[in-house]
Amino acid sequence: AITLVGTTGQAYSDGMRFLQFYYGMPLAMVILCVTLVPFFYRAKVFTAYEYLEKRFDAKTRSLTSFCFLLSRGLSVGVIIAAPSVVLSIILGWSEVATIFLIGMSTTFYTMLGGVQAVTWTDVKQMVLIFFGLFVCIFVIVGQFPGSVSVTDGLHIAGALGKLETVDFSFDITEKYTFWSGTIAALFLFLSYFGCDQSQVQRFLTAKSVGEGRTSLLMSAFLKIPMQFMILLIGIFVFVFYQFVTPPMIFNPVESRKIEQTAEYAPLQEKFNNVHAARSEAALEYAENKDDAAKQKYQEAHKEFAKVREEAADLVKTTTGNSKFTDVNYVFPSFVVANMPMGIVGLIIAAIFAAAMSSTSSELNALATASTIDFYRRHFNPNADTAHFVRFGRVATFVWGVFACIVATY
Image (cartoon, rainbow, N blue to C red; front, side):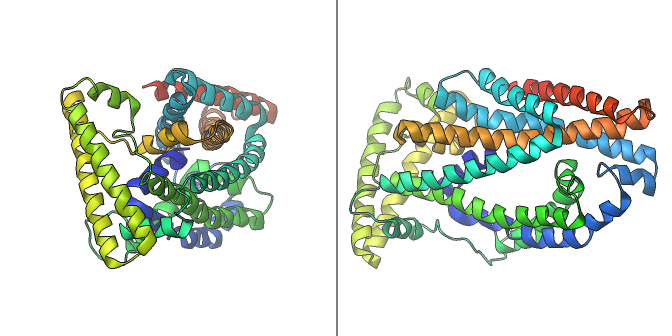
């Protein structure tokens, strides 16, 4: 859900460069398939940290598992909170209500169904997410001006460098390059998918080494197309707003705050004027696609970006929030203002599905680590399987409530 909301805004402001972050993922998955998957199966463990006791001692296992529980328990709160902000805008509900709606509904089906429920709901949710992405792309493109085709829209985005998906430069100030994606991110994916219980459980619960490897390879080769589609949605939203006046500030709460200032009215008028000039230049470039029209459009966009920056500075000055950014509000704002009602419902369902899919996997991993690495290991090692299942359900509920409380802050 964070990806669906945040990455579209990332593409709107920064283009497709973020896709490079995932270029090392297929290689990481192949390495894990060859090394860790058969290794964990031979070790016959339930958690990624259980092996540490065999290799070192119980203290190492417990400390590592505790670090996982603490960090992952807090991160689940973030996973719930991010889409809750978006859904509160779309639905008009309070953030607390959407937090507990997502958090507790996911907690209950995870608690009752365990990893099997998590796995099968993930499959259905993935289908819903991909369907929602396809529909979203078609609806956005359908709202382009009649004279602007998809190809024209891509030319417009490309004129500003927003379609760049490979950067071979060695500039260390650049956040996303081919090298950071294939080298630095490679080690990130190796550690995350090979050592984090929320990911390791995916192949530990498979019936065989082959199925475990398949689950990892599916993650690798579906993730990049999904990220590409989400980024493409952000690009098409950007193209749409070349011809329709966008909000000067996408965050509606912060926008209302600056509306009370004396600087707002003249700045809004200036914003409308530079947008009109940019829109005219974009149409001219879409029709002609020559160097002169391209340069004119680029200059018009620079003027537009300057005014947007002035608006952001006004928010920072008015609210005292020096780190203000409204990137995460671009897509929700677009959905509320421009999507047909039925499509809004589909997008809400896709956001819910993405949030619940991420949350359920994390809750199940937290419950498993709590049960296996602590309760069974240190407190009640001789209980039967049914007892541990009951304790796991209680642990799932406790972690779900904890995550919801964290999300409210």
